[in-house]
Amino acid sequence: MTVLNMPIVLSIGWLKEQYAAGHLSPEVVIASIVERAKADDAKNIWITPPSYEHIQLYLDRLASLAPADAPLWGIPFAVKDNMDVAGLPTTAGCAEYAYIPAHHAAVVERLVEAGAIPVGKTNLDQFATGLVGTRSPYGETVNSLRPELISGGSSSGSAVAVALGHAAFSLGTDTAGSGRVPAALNGLIGFKPSLGAWPVKGVVPACESLDCVTVFAHSLEDVLAVDQVARGAHPSDPWSRSLPQPAAKLPSKLYLPKNRPSFYGPFADVYGKAWDAEVARFVRLEERGRLGMIIEYIDDALFSEAAAILYDGPWIAERWAEMEGFVEASPSGTVFPVTEQVLRSGGSDAMTAAATFRVMHKLAGFKLEVRQLLADAVLVMPTCGGTWTREEVRLNPVATNSAMGLYTNHCNLLDLCAVAIPAGEAEADLPFGITMFALAENEGLIVGAAARAMEVEVPVHVEGADSVVVDRELGLPGGEMATTLIAVCGLHMRGFPLEKQMLGCEGVYIRTARSAAKYKLFTLPTVPVKPGMIKVEGGGASIEVELWEMPLNRFGEFVASIPAPLGIGKIELEDGSVVPGFICEGYAAQGAEDITAAGGWRYV
Image (cartoon, rainbow, N blue to C red; front, side, top):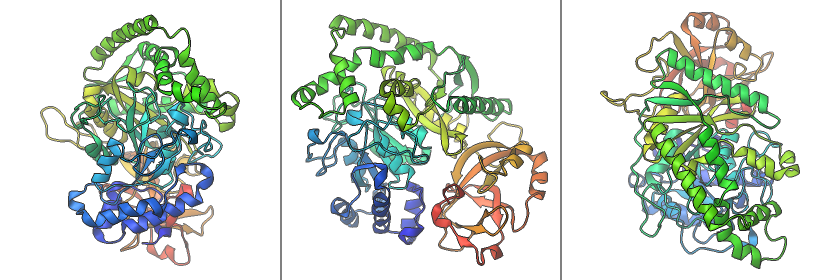
């Protein structure tokens, strides 16, 4: 496979499959990543970009590892630059702070031992202080879909690196939402394990008692593959603890806010509509017996009160305790101005010991309430209540940043785990996302609930039964089935001209997915121009599709409306499942432009 044929979306499963079949080598993958990083240099994704100079030793090391014994053999990953990679500078977004570590951070070490390849160090909001991705002297990281918008932070470069195919997964950190907000703004999954589940040794502290290492990926399957390697207490990390591998299990209840969440920014209206649509989808699934959880509506005020403590309370002093010596000893202008403003607020006279204990006692009461509430339940909130243009953040850096943490700041203070997942689009190229929260010891509940919400095949434990998986064509266990899924790859996708045909046949968008790496995509000479997806014997790639649900009694009508050379056949998805979907007759490829390398119609 050549560099030009590499799909934009890189997944662990697909890479392992390609390696095992001999269709691809880590050397080719790295060549592609190095070229992509050069081409995207203006997007400010990297502080230390992918380069053979530091990657070659990891490629050479693969010869001594058996793929069967190294679960992440040859898998490229990106590392946020507040985390140590031996021999590479750790800057935390500040060149004057930089040092070169002799050892990897604990999580990086575990991934490297499993055969993964750290390709570079990514940009971030300086000292991980921000949720916007613009607070870096290395430049504002550009959103992967709409360059005028923020990428989210502080793990900005880590998210965009995965979204643009510079890595199969990436490491971020999350103190107040930094591993979830960028996921939502770039259409990814952001998994924040429980505090201490992954060691933080070798991570530049933000709020050391609240810091987490997190992962960005395209699928729950990839998240769990990374978690399996990264998880576990570390003997020299006082913050780490032993928590079991999350075994996916459905909670008994799915909690939604009783009062409609607040939305903000220039896209507040479409974000609100996207939330309403997601709630309506959950309700439909419950009514059809396909959700597997009972929906209840709760007052989420205590989560908002807890969130306010993070920056209005003494935890900002913890940031200042870590950085005071460096900031005070550095010449004026060394630290990014808004970052210094935030850090210095932690040295306020109001941050007394008595004030700290008062807030700690208040927080203990919140934790008790939450432990009782979420005993066997998952809370769902928007990941973000909106987003901003980069220009708007420049003009109002503090208020815009504060808004981004509205539904994230409470998480670590309350000792919760969380997973941010895509939930469609608010409008074209504007992803919308939700986050599921559970108690620290209940990480399996957010995995099970997320799998059910996304309708992906992650084994889910149900009491009194063996593992249950989502069947994309027949629906979830226990339901009356009167619908089918359809994989859509062209003008019937959301935001395109023929979406109205899907809606006219009562189609409901479910999620974005990818085909198995067995297809080619061609531009057909039709009016309007549309794509044709053809299954091939060899040389195929994974193509992005949308999964829609449609009532069976409207399906025949829809199929009859599709003109040749297109039709409905069976599409194999990335995880091996098969669904009805758009296919194209082979003769149409003659003389048509091959656009497979784009990875999907949205990217042409």
